[in-house]
Length: 371
Image (cartoon, rainbow, N blue to C red; front, side, top):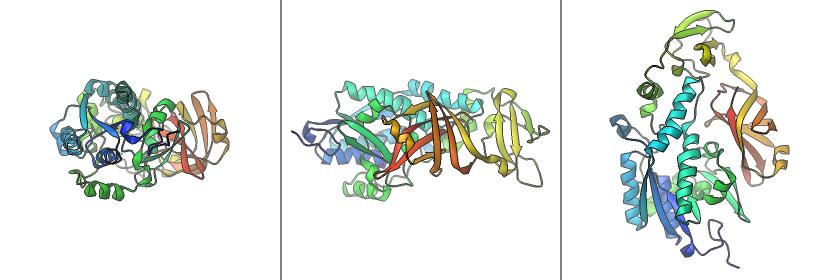
């Protein structure tokens, strides 16, 4: 019987074809180099997701024109086949439009999850399958453990880089086909590998912004695609009194303090956004504290229902902490009881479920915060 190779497939590396998603950054470039060095047959694929503007070209984002060139240079150096897929229309429909609609509904969207869910792990997944690849390999900082053709996802070792929150919507079929070689590495170790392999992107800065949002200016993106979205409306206090006027709900997110421009004896925060009435509700910080969350559109990765009887944690924002919780699932809906108080929980964000076991924190799935 053929023993498992380094990515958990019962084949010799030289007989194993992997597609590597190459964004042009140090992480995916290093993954491609590791796969090549270990003897795998490698095809690198880079996605062209949007048409570059001057602002995007000058910002620190992934999948822009410079990144495509960097990915091609790495592929040339590694002597691997490299393809560019032009997904601008799919990205606009699946990610940008969703992002704008979510903001107009008073939510705080996460386009990186939508991007993984659509073009990366659906369209790119299909492309890799069409190429008869054995696995789709990415540079995400998550740990995957594959046993008996079943892959489980865990938080990455580098907790400052862990990207498991953004991958909760991965299907079981996709997860069994995906591999994440950087999950057991720290970011500094990745850069060291890139330097030793003499990759031109070894010291390239990390992407900092959402790829299609130049310098974090969400409003400018919405103004570009939906110029009629900036409608003035009332700002109300917790008792329903009108205390001010806003210039469009898209300028606000739950928990925001700056930009309200209303003086009060205590600092005011955005507590709720009522999209159908075009209203912003503000109040003291104590009103941001929540212990109950309703979720919709669940995606459950684990096959073991007993996982939900164990030591459960949730994460309610990408930069947030793990919070002990109880989870009650009803088909595609869930009610989450937080066993610790949390502030600033926003509709449109994801609530991701984790189980603590002897391997680390296993991702069970998650859902979208409804209220």
